[in-house]
Length: 409
Ligand code: MLT
Image 1 (spheres, rainbow, N blue to C red):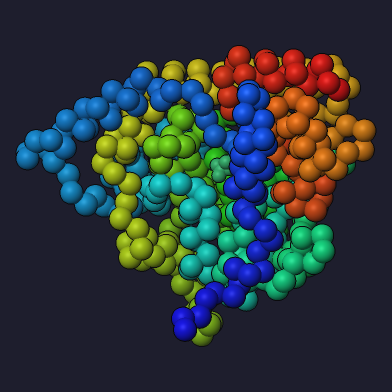
Image 2: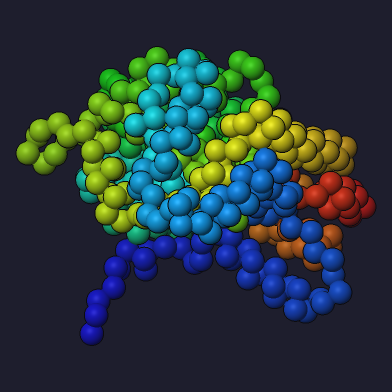
């Protein structure tokens, strides 16, 4: 009989969000009349910006004519999109990123997982605790860890605790690590990193020959002008960091699918024979073998984000969700809960009231208020006792959810 990848057996239960969905469906089946409001998974609710829709309709029409039809596109993405990304997302902020260093993809979750294909098995990997579960689970799947202990921590990973005590920004590891996952604005805590904090990490990575995997999927939500949007705003980061970006949250592309990863030329890793190998070359080889690229139509939609109308419309979308986050923060603070994040991020990180555990608070919210959030413990042992509320929903639903919580707590 065929054998399986045993590493999957080490994974704890389901992936967090399917597990929440399972519990919510069970509740909905028992309570068919309940009007459930979902502030759990960070999925957008507002329609695509008009500029993107118009561009995609035009691209669809082009696909209907022999002269303007497109078959396979370049695996790395069309140059006209990469040029705009390089200029407006990076060069405009003083980051020396060339279009050739940008890889268009169908999601930064996929890229965060797939990137492990090109790294060795012996790297020491550091993640924060709590953490976006994809970083951990993909390392488990790739066989980079031992089994999990009773708190859910996997043997072999270096966990860097983040909490209100350190402003949800990890201290540098006391041991030498090789791959470091950083996510700012942070999922799940909504925290951001200052330039000084990121500089500490860049200095650490350079001194230790480490590589930072920097997830900037939520950078559009940064409101504070002092906070960097890209790790490449830090001097030296091009020598030690890969950055992931997404069109999902700023332009509502969670269902449309488009993202990008920046792999600077010149970043190098060691082969087992001791030679230095360019990481860009490996990622390019990996993508052109295992990935067919994002559709022409969707890339035209993503390109429209960079038009003047697209910039204004995506800014409005982001501001809409940030206003939801402000309402959530205010209402929960009013009822006496401690809240973090939600100012430069679409996530509000809440301490569960009355000493409740994360899943107990989840059940109470679901059963008493018919509101769904995400238990903090699902993001790691240090998330226990916390809860994440997403600002991705309609204004009416956010207001209704907060009224229900205020009435019950
Ligand atoms: C989340 O809720 O954490 C998001 O759905 C993450 C993602 O976009 O994959």
